[in-house]
Structures are given as C-alpha cells and as structure tokens.
Image (tube, rainbow, N blue to C red; front, side, top):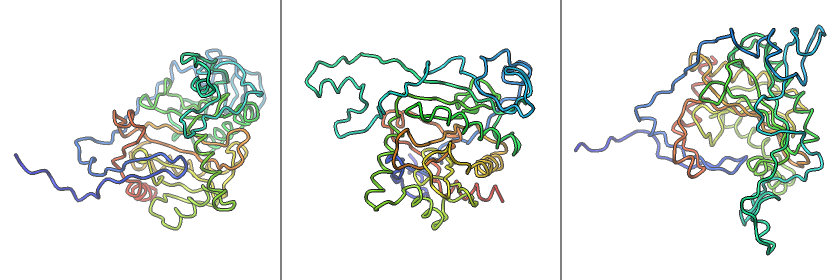
Length: 359
C-alpha cells in the first residue's frame, strides 16, 4: 500500500462569520479530490417563456410595473414587471399588527413566540404538532421584457432598472411585514424553474433565525464598542488587509467573505453602512463588477443564488449587504447534518483569481 500523499495546502481551519456567528471549515486539501468546477448553463429558449414581453396574459395580473411610455397594465411597454407568484410559499397580506416574532436564539434554544416548547416552559402541555398559517406575500420581479437567461446578461441600464425595482417592491412591504426577503435563483442547480432572469420577494410575518442572529450581533457589537457599526468595522479591516477585497468604488466594496461558505462566494458591502437596502441607492455598480468577475473567471456567469439582507422591521442596529453564491461546489451530508459549511476553496485564493479576471 502506497503512503498517503503529502499536500502543500495549509491545514484545515475553522472560521466564524462575523455577521452570523456561524462556522465554516476551510479545507483546501479537499480540492485535490477528482472534482471540477462546472459552469453549465442551458441554451436560452424564448419561444414558450411566459415572462417575455407580449405574453403578459400568461402570468397573474401584475402588481407593479415600470412603464416609461405609459400604457395599460398587463400589456407590452414595460421595463421591469412584478406579478404574484403562481405557486406562493406564503399567501395573503402580511399582518402589520403581528408581533416581531423573530426567531431569537436564546440559551434554552426556544425561539419564536409560536414555538410549541414555550408552552412547556410556562408549565402547560405543549402541542408539538400545532401549525400556524404561512401568511405574507410572494412576488416575482421580472428583470427584462427581453429573454435574458441570466442577471449577468442584462446591460447596465437593465441591471440598474432591475435593482431599482427590487427596492421599490421591498419598500411596498417593509412597514407591513416583519421581514422582506429578496432572492435571485439562476440555473436549475440554484432552484430556478424558469430561465428568464427574475427575482422573488417574500414579505414575511416573522423574522428568520439567520436575520435575527445578525440583528443580535449588530446590537451586541454596538453596545460593546460604544456605538460602533459591525459591518463598517468589517469593511474597514477588509480594505486594510486587501486579501479578500475584489473591487471597491465610492459607494460599495466587493469581498469574498472571511468565512465563505462555498467557493467564490461574494458579498457587496456599502461604504457607508445603512440599515435598509431598499432606502439606499448604492451597490448596483459593485453587483455589475461581481457578475463580470464571475463571467471572466468561469467563461460565463455560473448558476448562482443571490440574496439581499436588509434590516427587519424595528431593528435598531443593522446594515444591509448583498450576498452571491455561485453553485460550483457540492453541499453534502456533513453540511446538512451539522449546519457547519465545508469550503474547499479559501476566499483569499478566490478573491485573487477574481481580481485578476477583472484585470
């Protein structure tokens, strides 16, 4: 039996994400396994696409559209268009009177107000199988009347219009919902069911645990530093170190996060931290740089998931950021069973390659 191969890669290490407190294991030696980063995109097929201009009758009635020349709803002439999701994950109007039932991680592990274990804590018999209605709104924001399979294929004007539409629709619900989540799934592996580039917006009656966790950490950092901003401190240190910095301009910066959960994960941070993405205008140019860097590195933008993290309703300390995770790694049993991500591609290496790709 031959002796095990000795690698020159650094030993595995655990990194903790500053914003969430969640752990990632960086294991560069695992990249030696026989696996390749694959960029598979399907050929664009517009013949049957219900999101293309002229087929407005094949979607639910629009809730909003940008129509520079005017014109009737549910007809041609739009630049960006929002419609209810035909298969909503949540349904009905978000309840503005709903308590901010954030999934607050406590010492007991009992979180949201509707958690059945809270009854046990009060001495009552818990109903461990009690459901609650999944209320809220679920919209689709169609990025272009043209058949653009990827966000990366939008021109600068189309991308700016799409991000502006995200902000417009988020503002529509930000005072009525406990939390507003904006996501983009592109490619089959990322969960997209249609290839025409679009975003999904969820107006929720609760604050998801991951967001509640960030809110707590922003608050704790502010208290311990007499008013410091956690994201501002991270951004300043990333600029100083420059190891994971991909690009920077007057409004925002692009980094590969310190505890990146997957290869080539990217994060857009505002230069001037602010709570709500929907109330700002920074970040479009840096999102363009992110898409261009990925396209140059992988000969086309790979399949990806994108999401905006914005302040929950009533949050005192928070700052928005935009995360983009290419689907070029594999999430397997260890990650699913522990909640600890295992990344084989150090963010410092990814950032170097993306800077070089941008030229």
